[in-house]
Image (cartoon, rainbow, N blue to C red):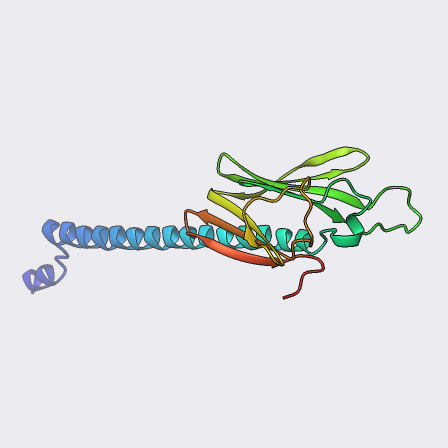
Length: 194
């Protein structure tokens, strides 16, 4: 009876224990790799979402500025209207002041340019000059601007020195990033008709 009891209480052999540890190690390794791939996929998704948000913010800023462009009769007394040369764009905008009796002009010059893969924006006041540069979008590979003017169609060069019969009514921006190739946006300018 004692021999039967000893055989029943024997337990696991060393090989059985090693085999169980090896199986649990493989399961743990597989789980760790699965978790790692999920974390990487989530990181890539977050980068994609942030890139889309940055692009949307940049285009929103451009749209806001385009809707504030001074044109036509408003520019008769202004020496500067709009200038387009390659990837550099400048225009005159009107910013509403909080205080209606403020002695500060509501006219600003807004400039966009591409430098080392970054789209920059700078706003200059007529009294104090540059207010600082704003980094709008990183990773830009190409930037092109065109303006549309009645009677001329789409043009790639626009100078404030040249006499134009009518002001530009739309602005086209085409940019390429690593994720988006040839993204084109047409912005209606102040006074422009859709």
